[in-house]
Length: 337
Image (cartoon, rainbow, N blue to C red):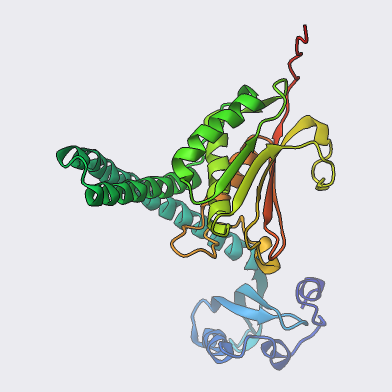
């Protein structure tokens, strides 16, 4: 064996016996490999090519392609098997990763198609839900039932929207936006979605603060954070949405806090367990029954696409704070006269 044998596998090289070499073949396939190689004695061309797992000095398996030629003396008697062992472990791993990517892409295409179809079903139900109360005005039971149907339709639309955003990432189209006006717009949209289950306070920032944002996408992020806060809040709880220049929360990845508008969504709910904090933005992770586990993942995806960052801090029994940092632009001057 050459020095390359030692470099690849850590075993001593030099003159090795068949037993020395065979000892490192994976025991599950050792007999088969030796049988196939031994069969070259009776083959006219005396060539072998075989793939098998081979263990290094740390007992880690490498996938090997072994190509060899049986050397014979003048009388035709076998002398030795010469050839090369090629470690194809990384190549096979890369091929598996490519196949996995193709599989995931395929699943994404299926999910996108299903989300579109499901959304079409919801759109077909919605007009009839709006029509029913007109046929029975003043009927409280029907009005209540229709309200429930409409809330379910809205939830279904949010789910399909999350699936489509996750599987078909849409790049934001940021423009200069007033943080104050955007927060006022968010309040109007949030009150349509959130209902009266909790108290919401929107504290507008100074009117001169500007940011670079796609307002529609950023509103989707904020609604996702508010829905998360609503689900975590106690009955009669409170959620606050505000901007802050408080430097008490400064993650290391935010090198220049002054170059961002810092939004905060704060609730007084039960808080998030420490074991869940590191997973909360992972796809499909959820602790809530009936959730897709995509809301916060998509929120993170959108904020990152803006060049911003999203964080959470929480403590059990003391509620949670979601911190959203969005790139700030040159602030507008205020005419005080």
